[in-house]
Amino acid sequence: MLSDNTLVANERNSCLSIKRVCNAFENTVAFAMQKYCNVMTSHPKIYLAPFQGITTYTYREVYTKHFGGVDKLFTPFFTGIHKTKSLEKRAYELNFTHHNKVDVVPQILSKDADEIIHFANYCNNKGIKEINWNLGCPYPRVANKKRGSGMLPYPEMVKEILEKIMPEININFSIKCRLGYFSEDEILELMDVFNSYDISELTIHARIGKQLYAGEVKKDAFKKAVEKSRINIVYNGDIFTVTDFNKFKNEFETINRWMIGRGLLVDPFLPAKIKNEQVPELSEQKEIAYKFITDIYLGYRKKTNNGLQAIGVLKELWGFLAFSFNDPQKAFNGIKKTISLEKYEEVVASVFHEFDWVGSEAGLFGIHLQKDLTK
Ligand SMILES: Cc1cc2nc3c(=O)[nH]c(=O)nc-3n(C[C@H](O)[C@H](O)[C@H](O)COP(=O)(O)O)c2cc1C
Image 1 (cartoon, rainbow, N blue to C red):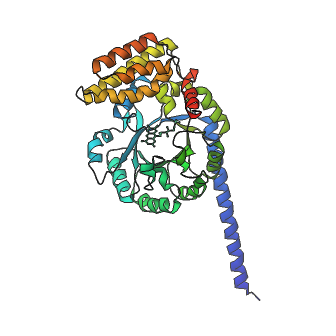
Image 2 (tube, rainbow, N blue to C red; image 1 turned 90 degrees about the vertical axis):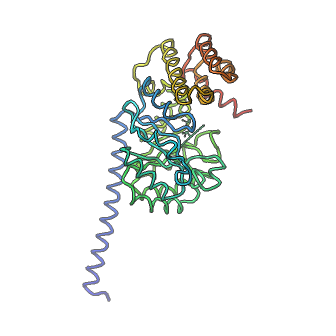
Image 3 (cartoon, rainbow, N blue to C red; image 1 turned 90 degrees about the horizontal axis):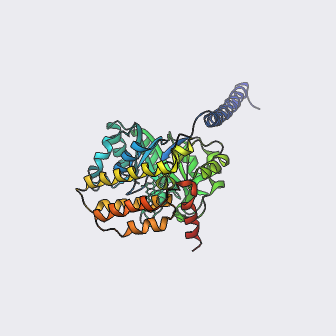
């Protein structure tokens, strides 16, 4: 027989449990409503994806001088900042909280909580608003050491690191990850971990690490992650044209933040086109693109004291930009072979003279990837 006190206590506990469940439900509904309302009322946010060796300080500064439409710029990852002089070498970059009024988000690749804390505090002292943790890098030499996307199969390790760093940092902390390393199901367990911390944004490249950059993006797995998330999600993967963007937008109704990589390197006007901002005719786009690539080239010449490394970096970028011309392969072939600054300038001038600028609308980059995949 239960005493009156026990009955009252039991009743109080059940009431509290019900209240907790109701609160949790209310929070979930409020979050879902907020997400939905954000999508309905606000313009999409577009972020420049980080690219090791390409979206450098010079690229970001020149890009934002010539083009609009981007809301955040992610740096290529910083790594080994404890062990090497890496942070000092690139410290100059961290003196800039933004380029032409667009916020910069420095990214770190690390599995060492102390190193991440050091980086976060360093950036915070420089006035930077947000840092990003790379849990997406798929390359075996990184992933095999449980770094980048190689950490995704180990949610307990992610939890341990977040548990250490989150109380110690005073800066927005966002994460960029994939759906998993071996399997897209890995994201589901990871969402429970991410949801328990104050992560400012979670960018998901909708592939698994094993895919590298090939194969289809996994839309259904991405949707499942979004459903589980209590964090604002940024979609990343295979937005190469305005049509692609609209397709993904219709598919992922609650998403309003998009990170674009290769599509933007191919066509720097893509973010503005997506946002329906005024973009000039193709012929004028070509002139602006010429000024843009020339400014980047001059920036690198200055940085390298007229060294040949300038052409090396430019060739990487041309590997994408060439797909905005009507014959990408031919346009790129000449540039690929240049081994002097004079020759580079000459070949670039002839590319702009001989080839038509067709931009992303022609969809040549997407076609090229499909061709590669069926080889
Ligand atoms: C050459 C190369 C370098 C990259 N460097 C980084 C990097 O430093 N940090 C990162 O988070 N992602 C990096 N990525 C991944 C891109 O940021 C992006 O997630 C990927 O290209 C998918 O987006 P997209 O389909 O819009 O290109 C890199 C990708 C490539 C191909």
